[in-house]
Image (cartoon, rainbow, N blue to C red; front, side, top):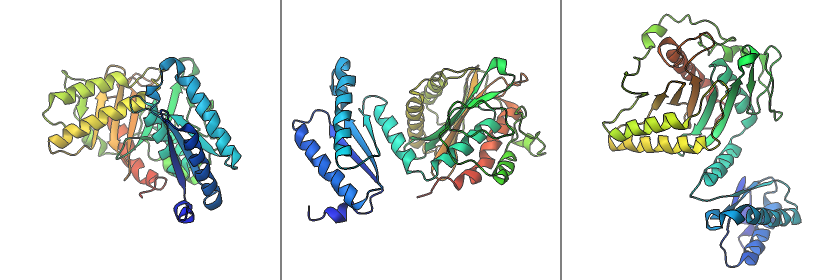
Length: 345
């Protein structure tokens, strides 16, 4: 109590964890109310996240009901001291809930996240990708993602689904928007020059004479994955095959809602394999008959994943040759552009 002002002054973000199996929930909520009062007095603009943890210990048939009851009590406590803005998550270490909560928290730490989402959506469209995802480098938590849905009967029209902005010159049907700040005309012109996609309607043709030299060798006929770091460990092939099964793709894909956590676990396991072979993980390409997933180091604090369907609008094999090189070059050219939106600290 004596150090209350010192502890709670200038706080930007508070994470409070409730144990669902606590023996004294009343005492827990009294302490929580005291923390909220201190936050309102010393850091009224702080973002507050509340985790109701160990939800796996609750019987599955009662889990949702008990979580809703705890959320109600938490809301009453917050509103009782004047806290209006908070988020609450039910979490467990045994499923995807904790990963999802931490990803949401990390996203809230990014300044100008709306602008970042807008530029990521633009990058997704320029690459003619199905989905683009930004992961935090150390934890592989999701920072942001953009998804494009291609309708067979829409003659190339697409929908962006991550809070993206619709520019006047684009024929885009907007699914969701959160009022994010849009890019300037100068940004659009500069950013459009990144693209070297041969079949993106808004992209200039490939005219880099050195591009042909950058085209990687095709994947070997016996495998469906090409890894940029390939320790001599048979487990790597299993990880790559598992990755190709976990990342969904189709002209109108039905994405797995838990795909980010699954992909994160796959990549972290592969990074461990690289470490055992005294190699450093840079990136990986995973390919099957329907799509190619490119995962590569991006900015100083992020990795990027680009998912593209293997058959382009004009029948190109998008996972190989010049088309593959175009995607990798887009990633390379976009790095410096995205550095300005993602803090290094």
